[in-house]
Length: 136
Image (cartoon, rainbow, N blue to C red; front, side):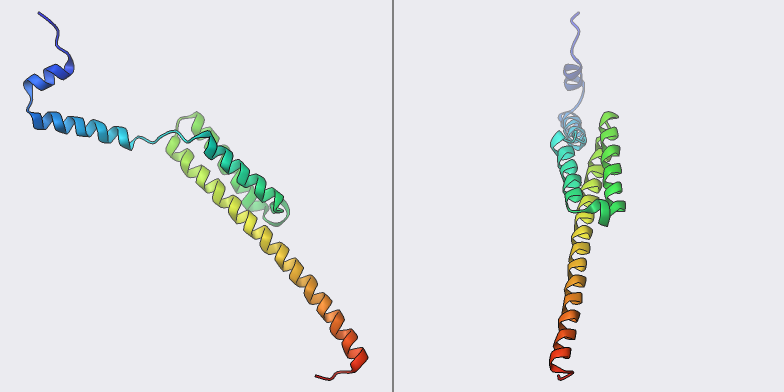
């Protein structure tokens, strides 16, 4: 007697609804599987860290920069262990920390420029007052 394939056995002994349900379940399980993050996403996170360093994060936002580096390293470990969902999350966290480091660095530079401008304004005001007196 010939051996029937598993699908043939299922089709012969079960109703079409059950077959359709099994097929839909298989499609759903396949669709819900977390895909492997691309190397582009890891490279993108590394570029974000590099941009943060260029923006001055080592001086102005070292904690955020460290978090970004740590999350990227953890994501790479997650990729090696095939924990793709965790790797996706950690890549996002790395990029978010990099962006925060960039913005904190920009803010620190703007604050420093503002402080310098205020200092120059005080010098100008003192010169003005010496020249013209304390007139409003």
